[in-house]
Structures are given as C-alpha cells and as structure tokens.
Image 1 (cartoon, rainbow, N blue to C red):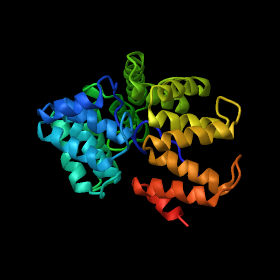
Image 2: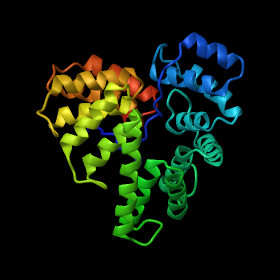
Image 3: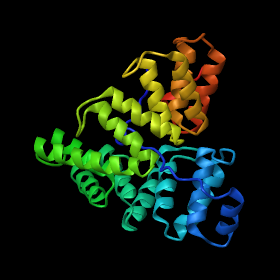
Length: 301
C-alpha cells in the first residue's frame, strides 16, 4: 500500500529554505557561533543541498543552534527524534525539543507538540491539549495549526463538534499557505496542494493540487515531489504516468524523504508500470527503514 503525505497529521515536512549562501561561508559563520548559519547548514545536510546527505552532521548542527535558542533548529532536531530519521527514535527528547521550540515562539514547534498529544506519542493522549496547541500554532500564523484545529472541530475531538468553526479554521489555513507559496515558500505550496487535494477550505480540485505540488517540487520540496508522484501514479488530475511517478519518488527519496523511498520500493516490488525488481525494492525499503519508516522495515526481504 503506497503512501501520500498530507500537510500535517500523518507526517509533516522539514521546513524548506533558500540555499543562498555557500556551504563554506555557512560553515565559517557557524564556527563563529552564528545560530542561523548552523541551522541552515543542518537543513542542507538533511536535504542533500550542496552537500552529501548526513544526518549525524545535521543533528549536531541543529543541536548547536538549538542551544543558542534557535526555535526552528529545536523543532528540526525534535522532528528527527520524533521520526527516527537518521537518529534513534526518542519521543521524550522530541517532546522536550518541541516544547522549547513552542516556548520560543515557533508555531511549528507548537503544532508538532500538538501532534504528540493527538496521537499519544510519548505522552498521555489528550485531545483537549492538542486543540490548545493547534490553536496556539494557528494564532502564531502556522497554517498547519489552523488546518488541524479545523479537523478537531470537524470531528469533535477535544472540542464540541462545530462545522462552521472547522470551515473558518480551514479557510485561515488556506490563506496562510497561499501567502507562503506566493513568497516562494515551498512548504506553503505543498500544503496548499494538500488542501485542494482534500477540499479543505477550498473546493476539491486535483488540477490545482497538481499545480501546487509541482511548484513545491520544482523549488526542491521533497514532500511536494512525493505527492506529485502519487498524483501521477494514481491518475489524479493528470493521466497516469508510472515512469514519471517512479522518477519523482526516486528524486524525493534522494532528498531524504522516507515515504518516497517506501513508495519507490513498493512500485519495484509489485512491478507497477515498471519491470519488477526485488533487489531495487529491497534497497529502497532499507533506505526508508533507515530513515525511521517502520512499515518499510517490515517490508524488507
């Protein structure tokens, strides 16, 4: 069974960034103690932009920046512990880091902490607390917080069911994602695509979803490339094209997206539109497993 990454509850992407400085300059500034340079260099190592993929270096760089109270670095390090991406999974450390990020005023940190309470991951499941954190993230301008606040109102989890409040929250999420995308933020484009995919806050439109996923992918967003591959594989908003699908999954996988590695492995395992290749399937499942995808670990053979 193949996977599709929505904008938040199932999985959320690493924050995109504009790689405007050379690696050498970032390294030099980081050594001088500049937290932003350490953070951006850490992102480079998690997305293989200008450097080889190296989670150990990314972890150390995020740690260094987080110790200097860089809120996004704390979030990214927490994300690594939460997903087990290139690091031993540790929900307790993830919670501590998300809490720090949230306290430092980063909406993504509040949103991620809300997800832990929603799922009961490393904490006692608490929908009411999740709602509080999603609302806090939304108030900070984090679209994912608004989106999942809407989902809680729609389903009556932690709050009284209220369809109108759900619609309001979804529309706010769309506004935030659209503004992000207009400013060339790839995460905003990807998440806006997911809203069109699901018809949340907007009329469902696979063509629009395709448009925004493609824009996100072209900007180097790993999740956008995975989602675009899913659209091609399943013929959503476009004619089925398995060659494009596998190409996009492989591209996203190279950028460090575990779900895309799993999807590529599944296509090779089942021979979906491409020759069956169990060796390649196993390689991709291993890569996904090493990034913390437990389902991929179970698929290895």
